[in-house]
Each structure stands twice: as C-alpha cells, then as structure tokens.
Length: 544
Image (cartoon, rainbow, N blue to C red; front, side, top):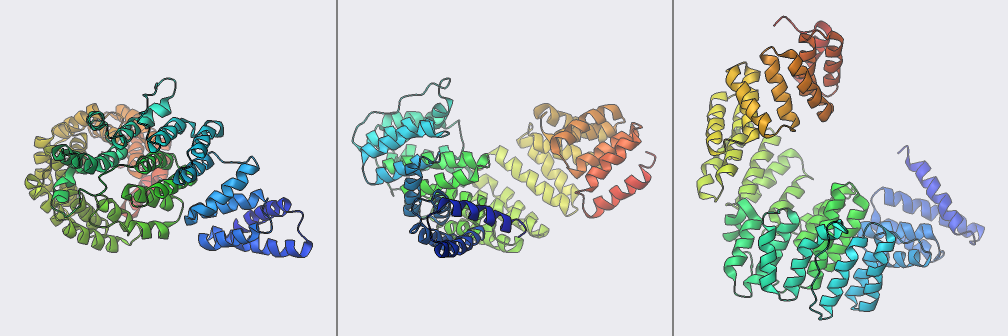
C-alpha cells in the first residue's frame, strides 16, 4: 500500500486543477469522492469506480482527468457505452488516444453510419500506431454496404504491417463476399503459415464452406485447425452448420483479436484489453474473441473476470480445451489436476486434454498418476491420429516422468523408441545425452547425442549448456567455459547453468570466478542444490 497514497494525491491534484470553477465545499466533497473512486479502481472494483467517476462527471463535464478515468474504468468493466462517452469528451478536447478511433469506428459501424465509420478510419493514421488498420476497416465498410470490392494486396516494403495483418483479412472479406473459390485458394496458402489467427480463420471458414456443399474441404480445415484433437471433435456433437454466413462483424472481430494478441506479446496490456473488448463487442458469441479477452483481462490483473468469462465457453466449442487450461490457471495445483482430469474424460479422444491432465498431475506432485497418464497417451497414439513425431514427443514426456520416479531403465527404453520415430529431435537427443552425462554413464555416446542436438539447435540455451557440460565431462575445460559462459549470459540466473559454469571455472584454475558463478546460482537454487552450492562456495570442488 506504500505507493497508493502518493498516486492518489497526484491524481487528485490533477483532478482538482481540471475543475477550478467548483465551489469550495463542493470541491472538497468531489475530492473525497474522487479519492474513493481511485481506491476502488486500484482495488479492481471497476464497476464501483466507474459509477463514482460518472457521478463526478455530471458536475465536471469538461474534465479531461475524469474522461481518462472513465475510459480506463469502462474498458476494464466492459461498459462500452461509458467508454464511448469518455472518448467523445477526449475528442472534443483534442486529446484522443491512438485506440479511440477504433472505438468510434465500432460504434458508427454498429449504427450503420457508414460516413462516420469512414471518418473514424481516416483518423487512425494521424493518431499513431493503428494507422495500418485503416484500409482494412474501410474495406469492411464497403462490404457492409454491398460493395464487393476486395482488399488489395499490400506492398510489404512500403506498408509491412498492413501486408502482415491483411493476409487473413483478405480471406475473411472473400468469404463475406461469397468469393469461395478465391477464399479456398487463400486458405490453402495459409496452411503452412500456422498460428492461432490461422486456426481461428479455418474454424470460422469451415461452416461457411460446408454450407456451400464442400464438406470435404470444410472437414479438412477443421482437422488442420484442431491438430491432435481432430478425432475428439469428430466424436463430439459440435454443430458444424452453425454460423454458416460470415458477417463483416466476424472479420472485424478477428482483426482486433489478432492485433490484441500481438500487443499482449509485447506487454502492451492496456491497449490489448481495449482491442479485445472491441473484438467481443463486434462478435459477442465468438469464442475466439472471448478467449482473447480472457487473456487480456488476466494480463491486466482482472483474474476473476477472466475466470468467469472462460467458464462461459462450453464443451461443445472448438475452443473448450483452451478455456479449460485458462480456468486451471486460477486454481490450486490439486484443483487444476481435478479439472483437467474431468475435462479429459469429457473429451475422451482429445490428445491435448489428455496431455494437460498428465502435466497437471505432475505439477500437483502425483508422479505415479502422471506416469500412468503419459503411458495411456503413448499406448493410444496409434489410434488417436497422432503423427510419429508427436508420439515421440509424448514418449519424451513419459521418459521424463519415469526418470523423476527413479525408473531410469524404463525411461531409457522410451527415449530410444522416441529416437526411432524422430531421430533428429533435438529435445530428445539432448535429454538422453545430458541425463547420461549426469549419471556419468556412456560418456562417449552421451557426448555424441548432445553434439547432434547442438548441431540441430545451436541457439538453444539448454542444449548449449549440455554441450558445455559434455566438454567438462571429457576434460576439455576451456571449451566448456566458452560454451557455458554463453549459456549463462543467455539464461540469466539459471542455477544449473551457473553451477556448471562455476565447476568449469574451478577446473580451469579460475577459483574466484568459480565462487562468483556458484554464488549467482545459489540465489535461485533450492533444497539439495542450495546445500551443494553452499559447500562448493566454502570448499571448492574436490579432486576429480
């Protein structure tokens, strides 16, 4: 609470300066109300904060501070009407934020005021970061007006953001314009691109294309989008004929979802929430938009809202596995394991939920249960439509769980089998090689495994550490130091890598550097590792 008081005082001073015409007694009362509203906002009681700000706004309709506070609270509370009122006050004062025209566009679009929508789109380039969206927004106005003009291809050199974000938007527009041949051609081209936005497009396009009689293509889209869960979806009563027409609102929602996801990746969480709110405003029934809003709410500290929204996605949705995983993040490890187990039972052919259940058991400390679950996944791989490469990954997870319960013999058998399926998998090669190095077994073979992994993924910090440790085990201490220094620099305070680096320094005669590296490792080491590091710092390494 140490920062709350000065923050409130600064905000309060700005508010009072913005309403100098109030009478003294009224100003004192307003100050008290404003301070209470700020405390409600800081405490994530956004509905209470919004009501208080709106009440204050009646006496100070020109206050820029109140307009800002109303906008922020309204977005957090999901009150788009209040957010719009705040934006209009900001607009009159010439203090509009970069995302405000998107809100004004959405409002004008919902009222079919095409002229105002185009004006809002035209305003974007002058407001900063979202100017690249303007051509796409104008295209959707044309679609809504019955103009079948498509979205022209953008020059990636002159407008890289438009080129990047329009590749799926062009297909949405083609679907809305009933240009199905062009849309299918574009969808084929995006298969190799991948990503969540491509998955969302495929799932939204599938019922539209199925309604045109091409159910084979539609099923292929669903199968590609759902990946390892495609058999689970086929076995469930999901209504594949629902929403057989694509509206402009669908395309606009998808655009805002995609950009919100990019903003979250860049930790621009407040703007991501605005874009996610607008996406759900366009398409309130879209589970893709709901899940993006869940992520944005969570990133802004609104975990209860995020959890409640995730809970509205039903088991008959393609997005249900993702919703389950988001819900699990709000629970204790044991509760999350229980939820994951129930979800896996509800979607019995879902590879992703089966895997999530196993990982949740492992996180909750139920190692024996996790081993059994991983065994079940691997044993059912042949009948689950899982590729050999994916099965090899599951065998790696099973091997890790077996290793954790002390059954190295069984773990080794799974790793060997996994390498037969996927011989160039750097993760499997690294796990096998590093574990043998740690066990001081088959050193030459272990080094060969790690060297192959390093050749495949030379930028992996974990594999770089393994390669350095292989040099250490074979007495090549200068080579070990070089690689381990690079790995430690890339990883920050990873205790295992810094401990390895300290060991390599010690064997190289750099005793002071060794103790420094061990001290860095000890800052985040726990339990047995912390005790071992304390001994090394005091006594150094014993003779090899």
